[in-house]
Length: 391
Length: 93
Ligand SMILES: [Zn+2]
Image (cartoon, rainbow over all chains, first blue to last red; front, side):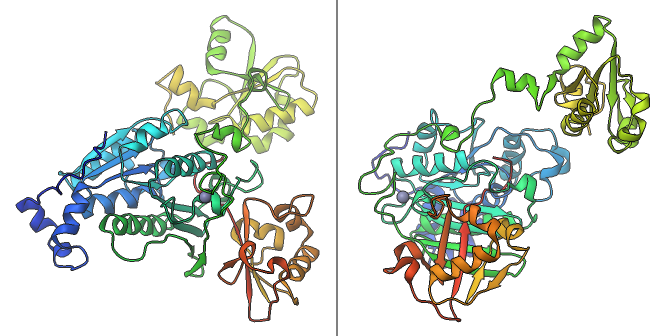
């Protein structure tokens, strides 16, 4: 736990003096500023798009302790923007991949790995150990959770967010300034605002915005310059235009206002309108029974008569298959004759999306007994047969 | 005046980044905007006509919530109105 006593700033070693020489000759940093950086503890929520440049630059700048919160693994589709991870890291924990790069960059850095999904139950404990929080999250429940926890603990929250070609950055939850809820009291209902997974994001955009966040974190540590408190910086990468809007502390803010109604952390999934899936919804999606790979294995082992339909493309079938009949999704409508109406049909693809649509199509076309394989061949490779290559 | 449409809402505004409307006040500009693009109305306002909690409107650099005359604030052709919705990068919510 952080001690409340103001301890003396740590001494700089001779290695530090040479490593940070370009900082030391800046009057705005100098010896004392570099010592402040060395003493600083910054928590990064997410080791992804925004977290990559944030972590790299803070580590390079000499921030003494960096906490990383992440529980994800590196996926090939991350590499377009999450520059802390490399091709050979695909499949590894993001925390391990990131920590390795950061220590390679700065061996004196203390990296604290929090392999956990930040929640109302653990957020206050985790955040309490840090001076500054940098929010690089990609979802609204965590965004509001981080905001409220920062307000309750009185920690500055260096905020960044991105969508397609546009970004936002600000510094929230300092005592004098506004918080995220002053700006947006409530999140959009699920589905109304498209997410990046649907909308896409330009790979360099988290670089631009994450570097702005890193700059703000360093300024807060140094206590120098004009932080983005009370200002929302808007970045439009297509027009390459930076605009700034004034933010005000909302006296009626439910968390930082004069009469707060949020005085402890709440259920943020529920707040964001996300209901947990019931067992029945899980088992049936749009009227299609959802079969797990374990169930499929049991059914095959039991010798049940199943027609396994693989709706992927031929090149995917070549990489690996589980012996299903290959009819690529777009060919299904004109090749219905090859799919036996009398048998029980299990449709699969790579991860369950295409097969769900085809299962729905077959169901509408009068097939009585069609189910979808949840997680597709990827789940099969992970849970049943590691000999099937993942791609 | 100019109305700046953010990326997530462009599909509901004919794909345009900027729209020009003739208006004397902020309120008139919004009426002209949602009149021309009715789909935007549900994204910006509740059925009761209140601005949604995850959308902010700025006249130049100022949040209209904090302007003394709010929606009745006078505007000129040189002003711009920005729609600033909350955004979440990365994964699906
Ligand atoms: Zn607030």
